[in-house]
Image (cartoon, rainbow, N blue to C red; front, top):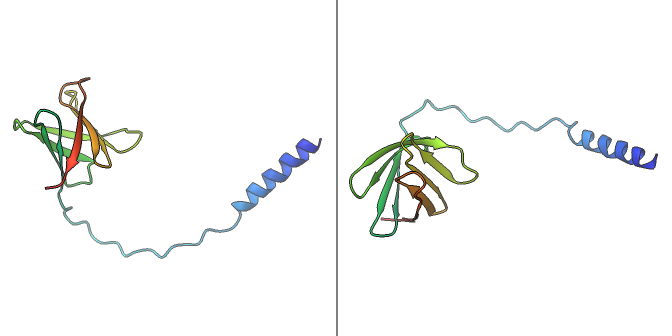
Amino acid sequence: MKYLIGASLIALALAGCNSYPAKNAPQENSVPSTPAETQVINFVGPMDLTIQLKSSDNFETAEMTDNSGRVHHLKQTVAASGVRLANDQGVSIHFKRGEGIVELVKDKPISITEYKK
């Protein structure tokens, strides 16, 4: 019986936490959309591998160019953390905080590191 009373009190306390109205933050004036700035990230890997990743929509889509000149068009996919982009041909890149993995061939991961020009 005392467990039932204790559980009821906890439920009431939690419900009370949500009963206060949220303070409304001042709203910013909306600005008409302008062309986004192109973001470029450069990566290096083993055996002189270089990857350049360009996006103008905050990496929803991106263009990945490797040092052989091949261009891959990628779009964002689900990732537990970081940013993961892939296409239907099995090419993908997954990066977070300057470290990442690129797959130029499906299931053949290559470790890469970001570098600043």
